[in-house]
Structure formats: C-alpha cells, structure tokens
Image (cartoon, rainbow, N blue to C red; front, side):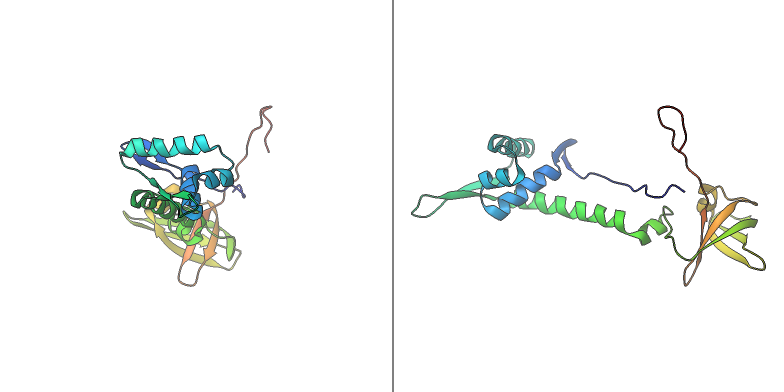
Length: 197
C-alpha cells in the first residue's frame, strides 16, 4: 500500500449547468459580508476592484438576481456594500457543501465504512485459508502466526473488490465488535526514465 496518498477535491456551485460560485467567489462574498466594503474585500484577497466587481456582475447575470447591494452612510457621506438575501443564501450553501465534503475526506470512520481505508492500528498479518461466499456475504478464514486463526464475515462486494481468494496475503484490523480485512498491496510509480520507485 502506498502511504501518504490522500484525496483532494474542489467544490463549486452550478446554475443551469454553468459554474456559479467557487472558493474564490465564496471568499469574496464572505469578505464583503464581514467588512461591508467591496474595496476592502478586494484588498484582503489581493485582487483588483474591477475584477471583484466583474465577478459579482457575472453571478448576478447568470441567476438574474442581485447578490450584493450598496448603501449610503450617515452625514459623513460614507457608504458600503452588503450581501442581499440571495448572496447570503449562496454563501451559506457553498460553505455547507464545502464543510460536508471536507468532513467526509477527514472522517476515517466514513472511509472505513466505504472500504477505502483502515487505520494503521491493531493490524495483524495473515493468509486466507478458506473463503465461503453467498450473494451478500463471505466468510473468510484467516490464518495468523500459529496457532492463531480468525474468521471474518465481510460483504461479497468487498471480497471481490479486494480480490480475496485462498492464499491471499492480508492484514487484519480488529475492532471491538468486528474483524475487518484489507488486502496487502505494493504500488510502484514509474518516473520518466522508466525507473520504479
């Protein structure tokens, strides 16, 4: 198994099949909401005022509704910008989706449930000595260093995905209520010269 390989993803909102709001746009809306100023938001993000304004106009043109509105200040003549209810909705929607995806990528228990990852703890090396499968589950008998032999019931899909058969070398992960199985793998990467690492 090649350790250190982790998944990454980007989140964006679409409207009628076209990109509407990504991470940069969400940061812009967030800064406007916090500072009450498009100019200050642009400075915070190190982008030009013109670019920030154009980005907002592109969103509004795509959905046909304003995401920001300007307001006038008091006697000093100052003013600013704030998000409309639509702008707040889009920002809230984006943040929720990004938070959900981020949580999923960091949640080891969810990874385990999907069969993508098993933590590096409570592991034992063993060899499959017997596999009994039906339509839904497989009874896998694993021989550890003698005199230990364990049995684990896993799904048939997992058995097929891991290509488990008699003689396969596996690692056993023991939890308080179950025995999980992971196939031992060795992954190599070729560089441009054809060498393996």
